[in-house]
Image 1 (cartoon, rainbow, N blue to C red):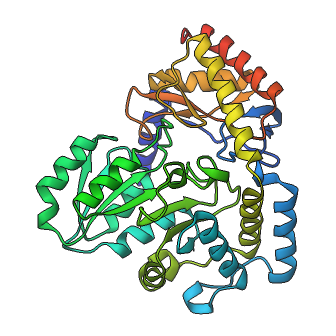
Image 2: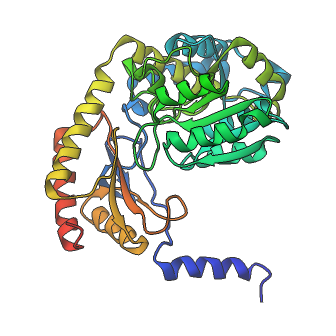
Length: 392
C-alpha cells in the first residue's frame, strides 16, 4: 500500500459525501460572462465587484508598468527597498481611506497573518468574532497573545468578556470582519467602538468585502458608519473590488514603521509586482473620480435580491451585494450549483468546512459589470433549478 494511501481515503470520503470537486477552467478574463470549460456562462462567483479587473485603464496602467519596471519586484522590500510605485500606492490609499498611513501586503491573508502577530504579544488578549474569516483565525493563532471568542455580532457577549478579562491584560484587541463574507451582514462597528472606548481596548476591522462596496466611492464600512479615526487597524483587500491582488492595513504612521520591522510576510516574501501595483493605483484613482461603479453594483444587487425573494428563496440576513441562497444539506447544495451551471449560470456551492454543517449555500456575488440581461437570465435559471430541486 502506498504511504500516501491515507490521502486517497480522505478524497474518497469527500466523494461519498457528495462534496468532492474539480475546479473548472476559465479561458478568458474574469468578467460578467466567462468561458468556463469551453462554454459561455454568466459569472456569479467572482469578487470582482466593480468590474475593474478587466477595465481598459487598469490594464493599460499594468502594461505600462511592465515596460518601465519589468515583471517582478526583485526581492523582499526590506532588502531591496521599495519601488516608487509602492510608495505612490500607499500614499494614495491613505488619502482614499482618510487615514494617517497605509502598509501594503502581498494579499489580504498575508495582511492578517502579518499584522496581528506583530501588534500583539504575550500579556495581551485578542477578542474575535465567532464568524471571522479564516485569515483572521490564522493570524490570531500565530500571535503569542491569549484569545477569546464572542458570539457573532453579540455585543452583550463581547462586553461580558471585556468585563471578565480586561483587567488581566496589557492590551486588548477586538477583531471583527466589517462585512462577513458568507452571510453578507455587517459588524455593528459603532457599538464595538463604544465598548472599546469604555474598556480601553484597540479595534481591528477586516474590511475585505466592504472595500469598494460600502461608503463614499467604496471607502468601506468605517466610512459607511462615519467612524474615521475611531478604528485603530483597518485591513482592506486589493483583490476584490479593486480588481487586482494584494492587501493593506490603514493605521497610524508608527504602526507602519513597526510592521516594516516585525510583519513576517513583509520580511520574508517578495513585494507586490510592479504591474499589480500600477493597476491598483489606477483602480483607486477611478474610485476617487466617480461613485458610478458602486452605484451600479448596488442597483444590480437590489434588483437580483428582490427577484429571488419574490420566488421564495431564503437569502439569509445579507445587508450587502453578497447574496447567499441558502440550501442546507451539503450534497444538495453542490447539486444545486451543478444544475445552475448546466443552465449557463456559474455559482459556486459553499459547504463545510467553509460554513457550518447543514448551512450550505450557493453564494451569489453580484457585480457592477452585470447587465440586466445577465441578471434576468440568471434569475430565470434560479427559478427553474429551485423548483426542480424542491428548494422553492
